[in-house]
Length: 284
Image 1: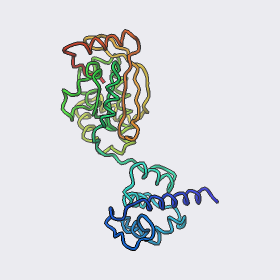
Image 2 (image 1 turned 90 degrees about the horizontal axis):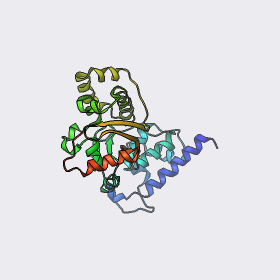
Image 3 (image 1 turned 180 degrees about the vertical axis):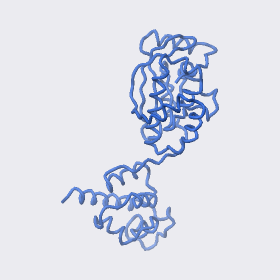
Image 4 (image 1 turned 120 degrees about the horizontal axis):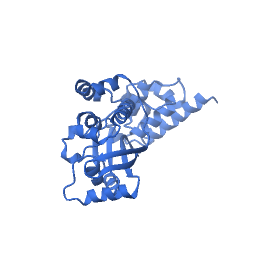
């Protein structure tokens, strides 16, 4: 048996398994005269707008590889989750589907509690378009008091190029800004969100010649970790290790964590947290 045939048969097995676990009533089909559980092949074909004969061949491992469009229609017909849809594409085409960007819907209370357990480590959650949607208390005193900003202004890229205090906090702003632009470009492309950020890109190109030049360079860069120094207006220099983490089950989100490098840096953050009126420093 060839590798192609083996993959095709795995696809058919997976489709049969998913189909058998679907509730016909939930899809508007009658429960009468059914000998087996789940939807019938012709019902899936009808919902996916494909030939019932061709769909039957697909489950039987006949008829060749399906197209991405057909797999997408079958995924919608079966109401597959994103994880199930990705698995369907991996079996059918040997690759994941193209990214589909969806606006974030916030985070779970459990994820917020995770942020809050980082007592001395500023941390926040950002979307694929670099909008900050959650943060912890250390982030408000070391990075930015995001709660004081309108929702549409809580964007890392916009703050990097539009807020003079961000520039003042970065000892090597030019290098940091280039990293941000290159990583941002890679993120939005990976998420299929290029059109969604076009208005932001246009705004920054019109208001910041430096951003416009960096954007024209077309550089891309992957996420990494490292150490950076932030010049805080009250605490002074803060050496911080930074890392980005994917959020399990939420490929559209990234958790960014800054850890103090030394105990002295941690003490400075504790002092800021104890302050009755923490400053609203706006650094990345």
